[in-house]
Image (cartoon, rainbow, N blue to C red; front, side, top):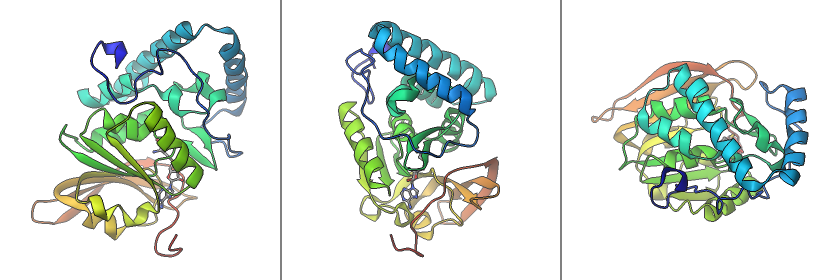
Length: 274
Ligand code: SAH
């Protein structure tokens, strides 16, 4: 990342400019924690700012907001893992939100990315990342690529990230974005993540970023002994729980609930065969 003065890394700045990225249409469904009026005002200011603000100052402003967000909403709320904090300081979330919402990129809340889906709240991204206790040599599977932001955060920490998205236009735009940002450690595919990605298994860690009604057995199978999986489980309408699943060296699987959460639903699975 150029900002840190270090070598080329995944999700670098876009030529140092705040170049707008053609992402997806904004869906009609706003996420539950978003204040509609604030988001609308922000989107309008964002559109104006893209026209009038010089790119360098916009990039600087984003950086300042990012550092502040990590300090207040991530470290300030108890995230301690240095690798997770560094990744959150590095990945430019504005690249992963739709054009009109750049100004809202560093609000600690989910934002709509089109097709009824959302980019997760930064605190939740950090919490899930930290919970996986990642090592630099790890290979991680993500179910629910969405905007690609969580995958980019993981790619700052581990060796390889495999990510699956079931909505075709989202899978396509995320792949294009990873290519544009030179995210070489991220391997993205279109498909039903319920079945995992058996060809690349086993994984040191698995992260599911959509709520499942139960823990998909194929994902447990594809976890290495000693591996960890984080997954929101529960009803779409009611509360869900973020579960940490651990597979011991002898293959024994244990689970514990870490946090009540609300995610978009995991679709596909055995019922639809999609
Ligand atoms: N990790 C994403 C969050 C995306 S929201 C980010 O950082 O932006 C959850 C995503 O999971 C949505 O894009 C949704 O389309 C996708 N999804 C839902 N069910 C899925 C399934 N069975 N397989 C793969 N992706 C799925």
